[in-house]
Length: 88
Image (tube, rainbow, N blue to C red; front, side, top):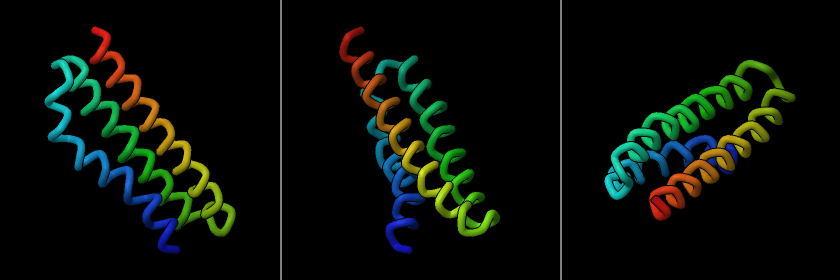
């Protein structure tokens, strides 16, 4: 149960912790990070919460896998932005 809570809370906590550090990105990339990253993290976690609380046991399993997809999408998005910032 604790691992599930950490999976749901950690992407949001990491996004909020890296929000001030996003000033190192170029202005357009910073804006893209703040908007798209926020949507990925908050909408993804909200969807996982919905699956976990309202759809029974199989919803909990779906929430687990969906949250893994959210985490991977956020990491991939962050890596792409940092690479784009470095190359441009």
